Image (cartoon, rainbow, N blue to C red; front, top):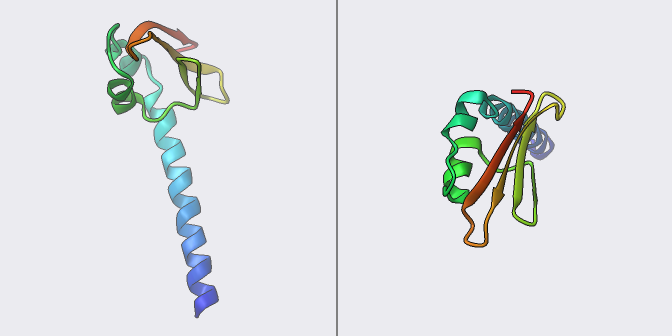
Length: 89
């Protein structure tokens, strides 16, 4: 019984991860890119796109389609968007 519950728990965890991964790709769209405005905070962008796939020195990026479609934003010293870019949207 314990083994069966552990297996069920692992299966549910894997399904959740896969489902969330699918949600991420659905958020990387032209419509959501257009919603991002200069001056927005990281929290505001994450509310639109979810957690970034990559984050390094104030540059955040989200990707999908095997990394062919990318949205990236640059945060200034106050943590607000100073630049946004999109590839293959």
